[in-house]
Image (cartoon, rainbow, N blue to C red; front, top):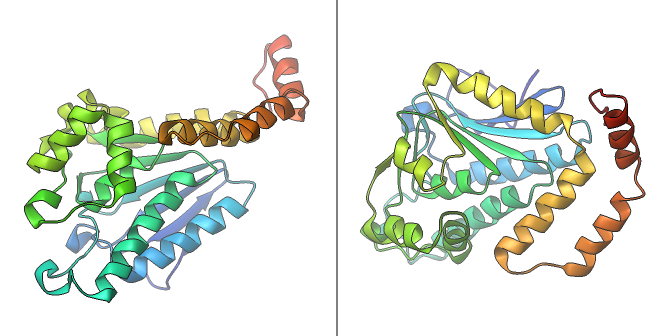
Length: 265
């Protein structure tokens, strides 16, 4: 069932598109002629789609992907030299950071289906997902140093916490392009597959995540993200642990294990 933040055919350039299929939601960036470069209006659409997904208890997993030969060329800053100092551009830049942080904080697990290259701000958009599965001919680069842009702090923090200090410095300070094999080696990619195997690998991970206990997953994802940021709410994490020990989920999980069957959460 294809549902969209805008009207119109999925074959035409548009704002991001939403498809819901049982426990899986898919958001597809849909400006293929411009390598799915995000426009300012797309940010609000994405925020509304994230809210909609999180409000639907039937949705267990979000897949984020792109149309065509690239995942995304990032955020359309236009002419940085002309616009960087304007209040409008500062607000737009802040809106992009807020949107990416919202994706990282989304309660359900997220998979970035990297159907092609990932550039600029979209490298952080993908990094905000919990898993990144990419085709073996994808590549990435972060051009901030070439543009004279000091990247926003939460994006740099994500690079450091996910990829390590040395890799974050290499990617930000040199602005060099790296290929899929190197993306896998440094941990940017969770998995690398041939293009013909991309959907199968994504579907396999979706099935695994959708079959596990959703409340436990949501709580552990939150705790893991807080630890990565160095801002763990210990009391809340302890409370989630205690609550899980008395939950219907753990009762079903233990019963299913004893009966040698898959759990039904």
